[in-house]
Length: 530
Image 1 (cartoon, rainbow, N blue to C red):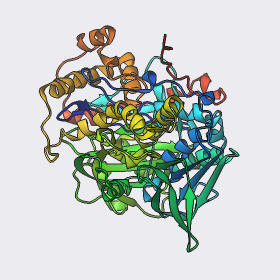
Image 2: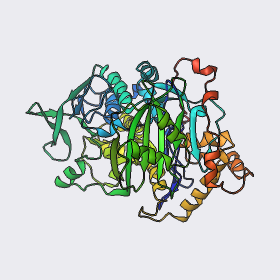
Image 3: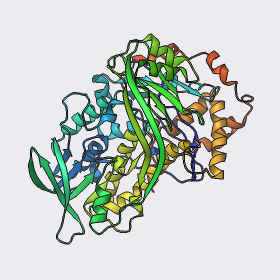
Image 4: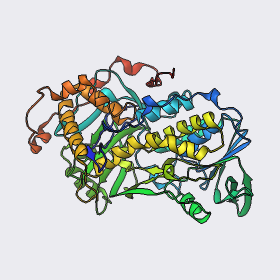
């Protein structure tokens, strides 16, 4: 799906921020941005998943962490290993409900086009399963109500079905599908204690875990660390004769709050009002299961997120359009309260920079790179990480897998990292000065976004890049450049005019195609190697 984005640029590149928009029963979300002189990898440049490629790499693989990154890694490993054990410290529920160890899962999440296509390959029928469980299929071409640069973006030329649901439901469906595989065993309520090494100390040979007070050693041919930002692998490396990976850290002090409100059955709109630097506040409403909207209110370099009804409404009233506040006042609140969360910094651990790394170990997901969550990239990047692991293991086996994987992963992470951090660098509180190419990029994208309010083709290409579906070079194709630089309007609109701009109702976005059965979105295909 196409999300909304903040345009921005960091010291090494420009970027966007995303947030979702309009819909009713069944959907998804999208996000991304672009940089011309940087070679980066998106879905269209990654070889498609091929299940027959992986043959007998080993007897057992252990995956640490049962969130999306760990579940997707376990799925690709189940193609070849005799046994795949997922170790999750939290007791896992049988239903899509919150769990104590992952408070962020209660906040709104989106699944970008790249993540949607990858999950559809890893779990055939994923979309149908999600819809059957209550997820929504939303045509984001018409049902995304996205406010950018003083006006709403135009509808794209083609129908774009995408999936929308709570993070809890996304994870629940993926976990159910994974557990259907005979080779997979999930051990929840089981804590990772330490890595075990072989006699030479140069390879990880398993893990020590604790469950119900008992300590147990699990031998493994491969261990995958998907434990998230709090991963202990860097410290373990430093304590065992290796270098810890260097880190890139961008302080953003993001404060956000979320709640859930009722949604009329015939209203599928995704409403996205992203922050536009130097303005630091943004909001998004995502249609989810049970006839509800997931609502996110976020502030970059904020002091404290809204804590109650009065604070939430005051926050909504500070946005450049009335739509968010109007919906919050007109719909019944379902949440018992307002969930609050602080995200101090985007973090990227540069494992690819290490000259030595133990065999038998791989790190993935947020344990490698965790992005500003306002851009909605996490689940989709986790799925792409698993796709990279699939190809690295199939091409080279276990020998030197860690370094092979990290080298391949680097260009995949470059695009979402630049997109997320680039926008954040536009705030004066963020340390770092954008380069001249980044500033030029911002200027170009600002013009593209202004033109996209009247040009659905520009809206569509923008959404494809934000969804990590197309290369960041896509908006620089000659035909797109021509549309951007044609006279499409004059000076920037008066800020106050936004409140006089007609808000898309989403009613015209319920064409006959809404009656179609749930379909998997066709993914762009990398040309076969010759």
